[in-house]
Image 1 (cartoon, rainbow, N blue to C red):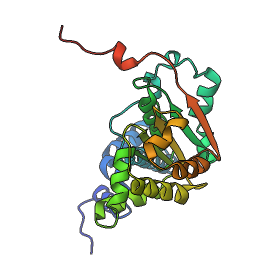
Image 2: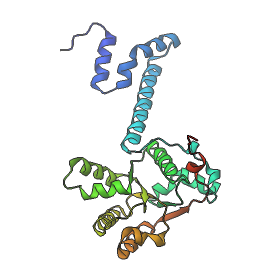
Image 3: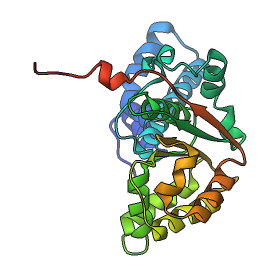
Length: 251
């Protein structure tokens, strides 16, 4: 039997049992406000539940962003759209609407190093995570390693399980390093699994005619492109390198 000293302590106990974390941690503050504003019973209950829901939603946003495994934080506000000559305002608005995720469209960002492809992909992924989508971010190099060790590494197996259940999968740096035919096959198989189920955002510094050199197998490239491009927008980013312009120097 629960032994408590007062009703407030008892209420905190029940809030804990019901996993109402915000009520449990802030009940005294809420009671003071209710007294100060002379809230009715219904207004007070409404206030408690609204605060609880808002805090739960905020924690869920932070959890989805963390689970996406972004390498570092980036925001759309910090992306210099005027630096990318091919990214019009109309295209920008369509990107940030995220309707392409609901429609299971893929997105490929192609352009030279330093133009902001990774920045934009992280920022879009962060926006999607905050709006309720399950998102996963992975470099091509890391993805290949995950696929190769899935059956012998429990941690990697769980990571791939989340990747396969994501609404948006971001694969960064496709084409930076060549991969073997076996690795290409594993990648191709994953794309087949995700086809028409998950939106895939790819960043690459290679044009499509250079992909056979990267994958090492033209048949694999054709199969991969067939699935990726079936529902896809390709955005060629062109402009001056942000990293070169903002490079640090000791001299």
